[in-house]
Length: 424
Image 1 (cartoon, rainbow, N blue to C red):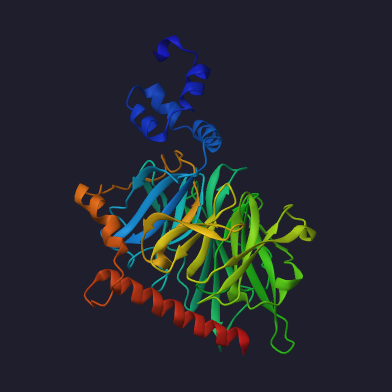
Image 2: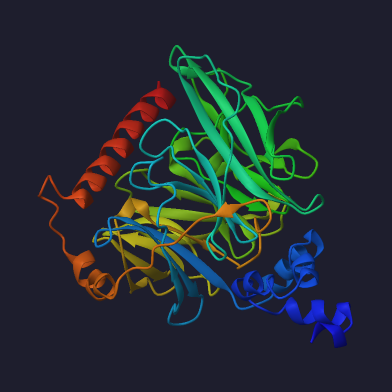
């Protein structure tokens, strides 16, 4: 058929097809393969996908399958299952229980294995087309204790995925600043030392989060003011195209808040910050939104969420509802106006949940390797909901109990350590 169609017409048709179909269609002919694998086509196909119906990717650790489980949902009234993706685990040998998801950009997830110990592995993964790229280790650091923070996003100007790695040395119960910074670009396939100016800020260990928006990665950061051991919080950002750091002020009520109580989040296309009353066992939180990007005067407290009986803020839906974990291991959709929550019927350990906007793409089609997928059996699927709802974790031999105990130990030990460090 392509013999009778101009190439521009064929490309226009192909941009509307799902990535999985396009991966198969590479076998039709050399010309089709050349089109589908070209950077130009992958770019315009992703742009087209971003215009389609909004989707949310959900990750949690499943008791029934003793594994991470990923599912893709339409952001509609019923939070419908679009499809279910499960990692067979090319990563299983490299991490314990599950990865931290650093972020998602243009259909690719960045995974880091630092939640249950030292970070050794960074993986970029496209769950739609089952392609992965394991990043090489940066040059070894000789310091006795290092703390790492990552940022991930898509560099639109250079049409490239990039990872920024910020490394802090800890000495005498403090982190030395400025940190060392390295940047990994998928196109070059290696880490480069960043030699530009680095802010003398620190990011909270373990509890950090990133937001990728307007071409830059954003973190909540803080600096010691040297006056009665007070800290001042700020938004630190790194532009992936220009490869420069910058800062943006937070609203006054957040500037001197304990940094461990703050998290950067993405809210309906805007940068936002969650302010918990306490990081662990929080009873309430406020959510501040930067209504106009870059305008520090536009910060506004848009939400107040009563967290009694609920867990932590995970993300937001297109209608403004908040996605949270519940203390019975379920995912909830919370209407902040009425104060009512809806159980979405998705279960896992409460600290293993990740939610974020997602668009299917051909990212890593050329650079990545195959990441095979194990499809759950029918018996797994049928028993999952019933199994997940069980509340007993008393059996020490139960792997699910092991993961929850590990989550609890890591969170509480880091919370106690950081609270003492930041309050001293």
